Image 1 (cartoon, helix red, strand yellow):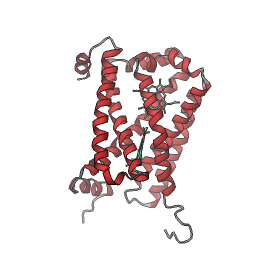
Image 2 (cartoon, protein in one colour):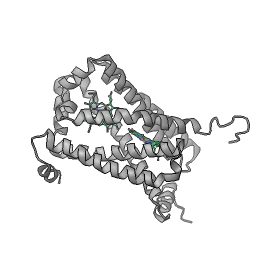
Image 3 (cartoon, rainbow over the protein chains, first blue to last red):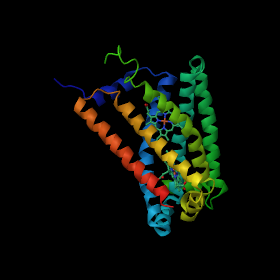
Image 4 (cartoon, helix red, strand yellow):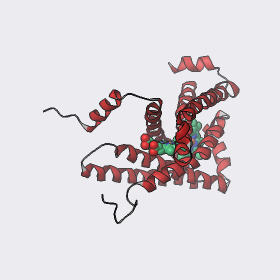
Length: 141
Length: 117
Ligand code: HEM
Ligand code: HEM
């Protein structure tokens, strides 16, 4: 008989379950956490070029100063800010009395997160770079 | 597992706790890191800027704490996710070993990056 692998089992149960706001919060926390872990490993590996001296490091980082990479870094910041704010929410629920108002905490986190995300975008694209926001987006695609 | 003689030890409550503590500390380091690195593109992408910061031993200590915490929290998190599935026990050992080796290896590389200065 055909048997589902554990991964298929999990995937289909994730799809099947009725999702409350808290389920989405959990799933997103998981995805962002795994994404950030992958990023940290790649990041440390990239930074190893610091040990090869200025030329090697600057040459490597030059790439990441291009507009579409700055756009990618902004998206990365989106993962960071969600995981951070929802992480704080989890800690308040576990250590405080947060279970009583976990939904309000979630909506609060989403609102604060969006504001900080847009603010960071403003800093990254408008304040310090010579290129404007639209050309960043266009060059990304 | 029977908890009769061990209390909550071995139940994972310690990693649950440490995941939260490392998370709380990471909040501050993470926000600082992102603001510093993007306040101005040069700060995050030019060797000379990194060099200047790294002359400060306290900054180096902070960075070492950052690498260690991020790796601990991240890889422990991956293990957490893995443990939500049921896999054969030989695979558990293989995955756990791989995570530990990755942690030690990338930790050593990360610390070497910092102490190079
Ligand atoms: C910025 C501050 C951060 C806070 C407050 C935070 C908080 C948390 C908390 C409380 C959990 C436990 C979730 C649970 O048991 O249900 C967690 C899980 C996790 N975190 Fe973080 N974290 C932070 C940063 C990071 C970073 C930088 C990484 C990547 C290196 C990361 C990767 C993960 C992973 C992979 C998980 C496991 C996800 C899961 O169990 O579903 N976190 N985080
Ligand atoms: C795209 C935005 C980012 C840029 C431009 C950036 C840049 C840098 C730079 C230049 C360093 C070298 C040390 C220093 O100057 O302090 C560094 C170190 C580090 N960053 Fe980032 N970073 C970014 C995002 C992140 C994120 C999202 C994380 C965590 C999830 C992270 C984790 C680390 C860690 C752990 C170190 C120490 C690594 C080592 O010692 O090898 N960074 N970062």
